[in-house]
Each structure stands twice: as C-alpha cells, then as structure tokens.
Length: 182
Image 1 (tube, helix red, strand yellow):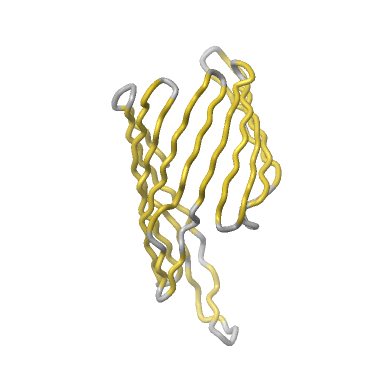
Image 2 (cartoon, one colour):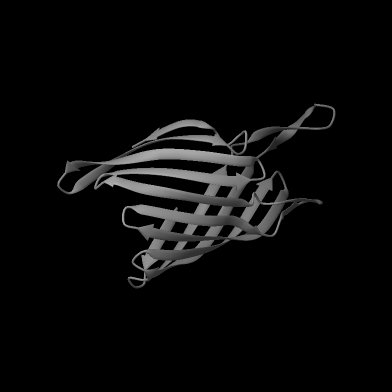
C-alpha cells in the first residue's frame, strides 16, 4: 500500500506499508521432531517526501521502520532511502541509495539490511514508448536490468501499459531473468 499527497507543484509527501505474511509452517526441534507450528511476517512502515528543484531535477527521501518476526522472535530496524533524478529532454538519469540504517537484531544475532546503490537511465523513444537500464550493487554483487514500456490507449479515458525487461545478477533468490507485465 502506498499513498502520495502533493502539497504543491514542488513538494509531495508519501507513506506506505509493505507486508509479507506467511501461513503457518511446521516447527521442528534439533533432532528433527515436529514440535508444533509457527508463522512469520516481514514488514515496513515508511514515510517520506519528494522535492522538485526545477522542472528537470528532483530529490526524494524516505524513512522506514522495518520489522521481522518468526515464531516468538521479533526484530526491528530503522533505515532511509534517498534518490536524485535529472532530466535532459527525453533522457532521465537517476541515482539512489537504499537501506542506510541500523541492523535487524533477532535474538542475539544482528543482520544488516541489504544496502543497495543504484544508478540508471531512461530514454523516451516516442510519446508512448520508454527504454530504461539500471545497474545496482548489493551484498549479493553487481546486477544489471533493462526494459521497455509502451503505452496503449484503450479508450479516450483509459490507458494500459505493457512492460518487458531482463534482470541479471544480484541475489540468487532475487529472480534473474525475463519479466513481462500489463
């Protein structure tokens, strides 16, 4: 869930909630014997703002509280994301840093949030077609992504967007490969 509230043509506030809730799972002891069930949840509550400096430059800042729980254990962390975008006619450049903050502490173990640096560019080929490329660095390594988006008029009041892309690198569980969406 996300909500953006424009305050003026130059300032907007935003808030959001991300949740991943898993169903009940079997719980086992060290000998491999089933001892019951448990559930798990990951979530983040965020708030931020975007500032438009000129028609071609803008900055965004997001603060978030992150929570994880598994069985009776809970972990919390606080982090921030920041990004800057610059436009030259049909070309946009952006840079961002994500997850600057405290580690998650689960019981006696600390886990760093996945600090991510990214930079990318998008080029508007026509009024209704974009091409974009992105490079990102995480603890899982360097990743690259590229994609395209096309706008299709369904009715005079309705528009649909078709997207396709390819991502490589980064975390092994992040899902490298082709994507497609409407």
